Image (cartoon, rainbow over all chains, first blue to last red; front, side, top):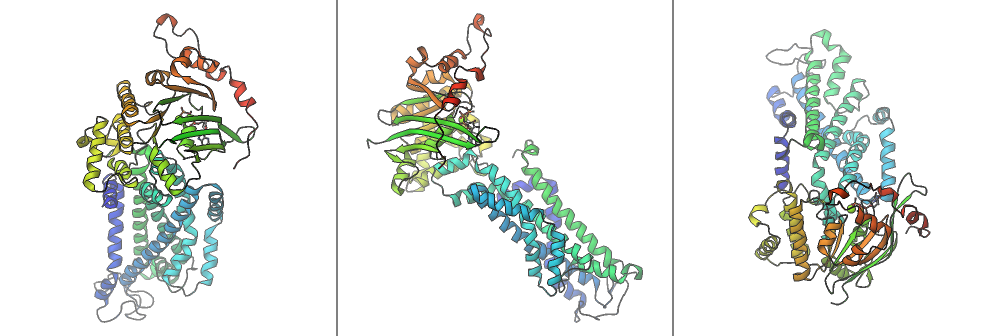
Length: 291
Length: 294
Ligand SMILES: Nc1ncnc2c1ncn2[C@@H]1O[C@H](COP(=O)(O)OP(=O)(O)OP(=O)(O)O)[C@@H](O)[C@H]1O
Ligand SMILES: [Mg+2]
């Protein structure tokens, strides 16, 4: 398949990109296996249940990372919170990218007043301070589902994707090969799909990775200051609990350290993917890459 | 068909531009000419960089709608054709562009532009017939199909890529080829080969070429008719021989003077400042009142 071929070609060119993808892949795998892992830890009891075990157990063979203030197994909690964080990143990243790509293509390819209108709108969303708005929004969202949180966050992250991709569309649409496609009777949608989109894949990848990153960390930011939407336990929520209960002083350091380590790893992986993609596709850095 | 004629009447193309008095830049002003397919001929359009040559090519190819005036094919406005007329126009008016590098989408193998032509213009009904056609056309432009097919654009030389574009023309057999500086990026040897292929096409496949260039020696080589354009205005036209030997417009004389002289005694004695051409202040200032935008 062309698409896979292109992806493989890209990965071969950047060790950074490959490393980032491997780390991310491992974390996704861990998240996918989280129900099984949780089951393996708990056996017949649900390790995430309140008062499943004794409170504040120190790390040991039974509970690798100890238990929290409600007697839940921290290892099981961290694993399932990782899955939640990744899902939110994926949902928000996907929505942002899809909306961003559509807006960017309509604006960039059609040009004229449509471009003016959409660009102004995107610009406005870009400059309004999103974090306070998120805080306000989450005040209303006390018992929301994971999906709703993802949607909420993506409202603010799609303009970033749209902005990068639009400028690329603008530079690509005046390429001679687009003119050649037009005199070969290709229609607008066909040109967008077959001439422009493939060349935009890396930028779409960057858009996805950065909005996923933004969403995960936006939510963590909300949680840490205690304003996260209720009902969703992601990595930020565990960190907030650790801070709030003074877990560190009680010897329950894993509750604080492990989520932060996972987030750092995730941050590093997504950034490596971003930088790697830019490295491979930035024309100025490209010269030596060849194929 | 006898009505294979492209006609430009009073074509004007303006662009929004910052830093000009009225916020517009007039790239082409009141351009009128006719290209006839019968008899097939070469019409050169010569002028310096920025004179509006590519803009005219884009107008003729239907890639850019002029801000005033009309471009007609067979007497019909090309921006207002029925489905069947549009197909007929597209089939018969095809380009060769300047830059053999960016004409290929780097994402695909070069075969794709040829297959696209086969499919979009229904040139062959089976895969085998399409393959045969592609091979035949590649051979017609002295390319070895085995050495170019299946390759990515960056794996071919500029000359090879530009000849693939010619192979595409060979497949489509349009009545008109709009060649926008097709040889300016090729070396002298490949350049001659390219021009000879174009002349062959004119003779054997009865193609009329609008050949855009800034280089008078290629105009000499091709012969036929020539139009001289400067600052968006076509200032002189006629058979190559008479325009070259008895230029009537000062700009044409300037162009002729700027051909490098092989005689060492003659070299470097005069300097030519392009911006001080005799018509520098006439074309822009005396151009007719701009028509409103569409
Ligand atoms: N899309 C556009 N938007 C704004 N200005 C344009 C556009 N296309 C062309 N121009 C301007 O119109 C003028 C004529 O450009 P054009 O490309 O037709 O020149 P040219 O004769 O083909 O030059 P060259 O020999 O360098 O290719 C130039 O001043 C150019 O900057
Ligand atoms: Mg040009």
